[in-house]
Structures are given as structure tokens and as C-alpha cells.
Length: 390
Image (cartoon, rainbow, N blue to C red; front, side, top):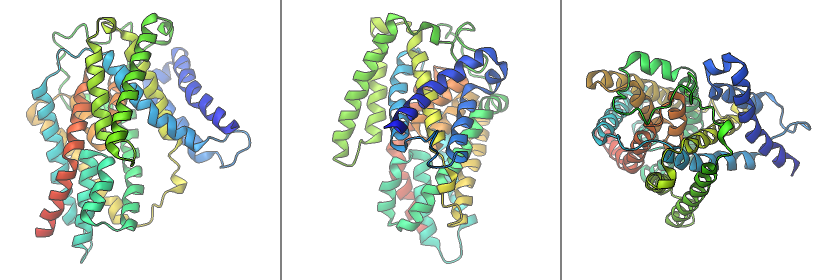
């Protein structure tokens, strides 16, 4: 019980404290509060001994917060952003370029890293890996069953994916905005003045100074609507899951659809604080996932070719996607959010949007992630049979 209370206070208070300190210490603004929270979480997870009598996090409570924060963040952020200028054509173009990048690199990596005499096993690995980086973790279990992957290999992929995507997430948090905006054209924000974060609302890294406005009546309206949307979405996703947990595709799809519909309600017009509250949930989520990342418990030495292959897919697809974006003249913000949606899955899109300080990108990123969720199983199974033929 004491550990549960400590964990709750830690996850709710530390993000608030970091935000408050960032007003005084400019270096926090420069590296972004997310980076600071991620470092704090990694320190707690890896440097504090287990069973510490003074400070010991409850794993179940930490998992609960990381699972709940995103379903709350998505509707809050969507209800607080402008949706009138979203471009369907751009979403399709960005998604196809990201999808092709993952497929090309996955096939190339199959021939580079495949051990001699293990074509079928590595084809299974390629299928599951492609499903992960186009559809997300929920597709992983389905693809494992579809291609007949052994449990041991599946555990290796799970462990290595945590390492690779964790490193990539650190890169996105620390360097992502600068790198993508430096390499690619800036996002076109013409005719979108009402949807942008004003200088008085956001700091240089996109963080919103929202704590001074939490007392507003609109905050309670936003929270109430969000709880209703999250409850409906979860119940439907749980029903579709048929006793195996909530169906993540259905959950994200319903959260997005209902939040977009709610954003057009008269009471939600110009509700800046809704986006701000969602941003706070993202900070809680960031701290929770970092606090659960204990590298001491990961089986790193199991089968290194799999680790090299997953790293090759993430790095190679990123490079290739940037090259495609240069040819197609896609802006850096769209490419970054697409990459995060495919590699880290849609729940990380609000985090990417917060890093970019670009609320208009949320719908684009979640849509790309959902397309990946829906197509990931088909792509993975198709690639498996293609590689066996080759």
C-alpha cells in the first residue's frame, strides 16, 4: 500500500515539479522537460536497488499510469487542436513513403543478417519485425501465431524491440525536432493562425505554460468529456477483444473518432486548456515508461543477429524515409510524427506533437498509425511468404 501511494505521488508530482523548475532554469526549456523526465525515469529504474526501503515503485501502479495516460492524452489533445485544415492527401503520401521505407529495409536486412541455413526462421523474424514497425506491438502476437514462430525467438524479439525503440525514442526526444526540421522543409502553416501555439502559450520547445489556467471551468468540461470518451472506447475495445484484453486498434480508433467529434461541440471551441491537460498526461506517460525500463532484466545476449536486424530496420527506414520525403517535398514535422507512429506506435504521437509544439500534427500521426495497425498483419504475413519464395 505504501509503495502504491509513493508511486502515485511520484508519477503525478515529478512532472509538475519539472515544469515549475523549467520556468526558473532555462536549461530545462532548452533540452525540454520530456528529456529531463525520461532521464529521471531511467535513473529510478536502473540505479535505485530493488527493495529499497525508502523509495520503491509499485510496478502494477506504474503500468496502470502508463496505460491510462495515453487514452486520456489523445482525446484531450485532439479536442484542443484545430482540425479544419487536415490534408488527407498528405497523410496518404506520408504513410506510403514510411511504409515503403520499412518494407525495403526489412527485405534488405533479411539477406544481410540471415544466418546460413536459417531462412525460414529469419523469414518469421522479418515478418514479425515488419508487422511491429508498420502496425505496432498489438500485431506482434497475431503474426507470431500466423508464421509459427517459436516462443524463444518471440521473447528475443520482444526484449530487443524494447532496446531499439527505447534508443530511438531517446533520439526523438533529445534531437528529433532539430534534426527533422534541419534536414527537411518546414511545415506549411499558411492560413492556420488560429491553430498554432502563440508565443505567449508555448516556450521554445513547444511546452505550454498551462498550470496557471487549470482552474478554468473549461478544464472540467474537457476532463469530463475525456473520461466519457475513454470509458466508451475502452468498453467497446474490451468487448471486441473477447476476453483477451482490449483491442488496441479499436481503442485508438474510437478515442480518435469520438474526440474529433467532440472537438466540434460549441463548448469545446477555443479550449486551449484541453490541449494543455493532454500535454500533462504525456509527461506522466513519459516518466512512467522510462521508470519501467530496467535494462538489468533484459536478455540482451540471447541472439545478437536479431538485435542487429531490428536496429538496421529502424535506422535504415528512417534514413530512407527522409530521402523519400526530400523527393516528395514532405515537411519535417510530418515525417517525424509518421516515423514515431510506425516505429513506436500511435500512443506516442501526442508525445511527438508536444515535442514539435505542433498540435495540428496529432490527427495526421494517429491516422498514419491506425493505417499501420490495420495493414500490419497483412503486410507481415505477405512478406513472410515472399521471403520463403525468394
